[in-house]
Image (cartoon, rainbow, N blue to C red; front, top):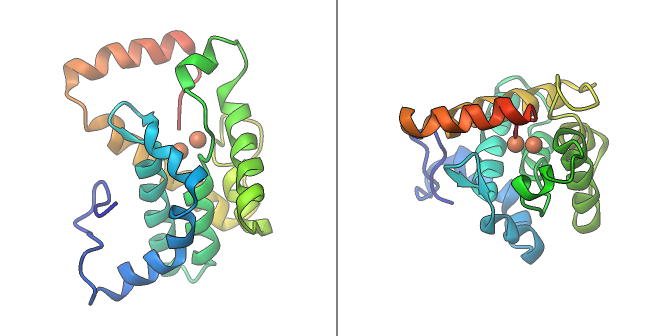
Length: 179
Ligand SMILES: [Fe+2]
Ligand SMILES: [Fe+2]
């Protein structure tokens, strides 16, 4: 967890105040064993679910900090937005909607292990907008939703074109994209 996708940022420079503040904001989450299980799941075919959440949290933190918003809640909401522990491909075989179910499961897991305020709840529950069920009702919720799509694009795009085409075909066939 030293590098963020699409960014020159690393978390190895102790004199980087922004990076250190970000790490202090989310470090306790990364230490919880149940949360660390996200490292075991491949996400967007190029990374882990843990790294994806870290990527989303970083951009949510930065964009909200620049906008004088609640960047702590946005970063923590970003960390927890995909805190679900099932294999997406296996889940889709059940016929249930992954886009609707996984934000709810992430919120339930988040509440089990961490304090979740109203802004964080919005960030987690409504991050799939405009697919899924709900629409964000806080600015921070919109930012996390946008950061999720930005990171998902970078993560999917980090695969070579010939690897991406079959994946897109699979996504179109299932009509239930993963973000
Ligand atoms: Fe998601
Ligand atoms: Fe996501």
